[in-house]
Length: 610
Image 1 (cartoon, one colour):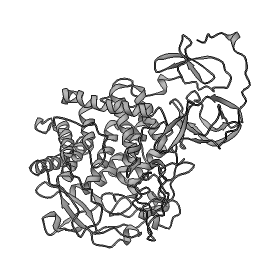
Image 2 (cartoon, rainbow, N blue to C red):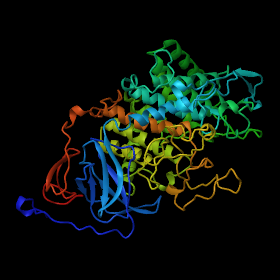
Image 3 (cartoon, rainbow, N blue to C red):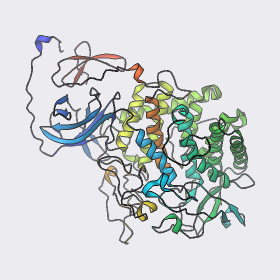
Image 4 (cartoon, helix red, strand yellow):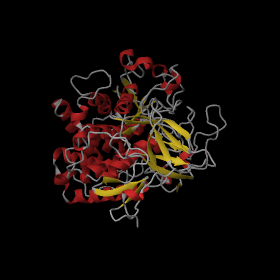
């Protein structure tokens, strides 16, 4: 037991020994929010950590946590909590007198610029229009794929042609795919629907679409294309691509014929869900457009109900992205949930949700969001969905307390692992909305920390942002535009051990696998398996960063419990410096009172708890 008394404390000189191996600190390279809990990861450190301000003054001394092994990278990692430092500025990190970093930043509105960049990237992915210098700057380009009339491939079961323009290029190639547009467009629509007041005024220099806020203007460009992909019978075509992938050329130079390919249940139900959400979101701005979206949703659902198991696979003459899906119940659940919310028609109401974090192939978790956040409409189903959501979220919180302090487990490092991380963060925010428990918010922030540099690659996975960021993404415009810097605001796919792009051909990568999934990555445009970009990978990142910004501007979703919005009005407005050798201090954390001394935490009985 430790008894606290002023006479029992005297200044103690701590001698720090040099680590056997050079220590490395891994941080969120964009910055940390003033009032948030803050931590970075330390590998091969020995002794206390000093954080030093621009004048050379040590403003905080922290004791790292006990080391724990993080299986995805094979490293023993200590977490360093520096939450007490809440004065905006740039700082250095020192261990044993050695400066490890000089780019530790604390700031207000920390993520506003990355929110804007990650959303503006969709403008750079627009098909069928030129990107003007006024909006695109040095990444201006000529229009690609402007032909309005496109031939129906035999896989559609139809002949002739349709008119189909607009939309976003899906990834590093120039295909447009309904299934992947589904989860992407839904995620961005949800961001607006959850925080309309914040996004009504946030702008990032894209062409105006009437009086629509920028986020809705951008989304509408893709919705307009999706609407062209619905057949007269209500079914929705699977994709609009050429027969094979193009070379490294600009969009205007990709002159291979494009085709409308396939028709299936997954595309149709995804389309129905997205259009049902769009009907709600656009109603205040354009009732006619909203009605068009809702009627399209109903028509698609009717076709899907008649054709619930029509699976898509690539025809023998097509090599572009398949987005094939063998299980289709989740898409129907997703569509039924959103149509029930939009119409109140109980014939759409599904009987269950899912405990799985969403991905393009498994959208059951999107139905979980819809059901858990509409308690009145779904009744007992809403509680079941909430329970399922919280059970998974609690496991994420537990994971975030060791290793690199992130949510991801070894098996999460699949193709597009950064989208897995982003969607885990979105899942955690929904848990926060429904409970107000800060542990979920803090774990979601840690996901953002990971994506922006607090990872074993010491890399920001967002192009154009961070001390060290991806420079050579697998993205045809960035490769062939003769501009050295990649288009900013793109989240690259991230590490994963598959190595599908490794080989001896000139266009393939040399072996970059490390034996650990979290470090099997190469920043090279050859790497479509670890360094490509995709619309569905950007969307959860944009939602995560955008929602955190909106929450900290005092906004919360309409369904959220009281206290979710975080504003300066409920926090201390006097930022203070936390100095080394301050002696014992009272701390009020998560509604509990503690005593902290020399980086250690004790309860009021004097028992050490951290």
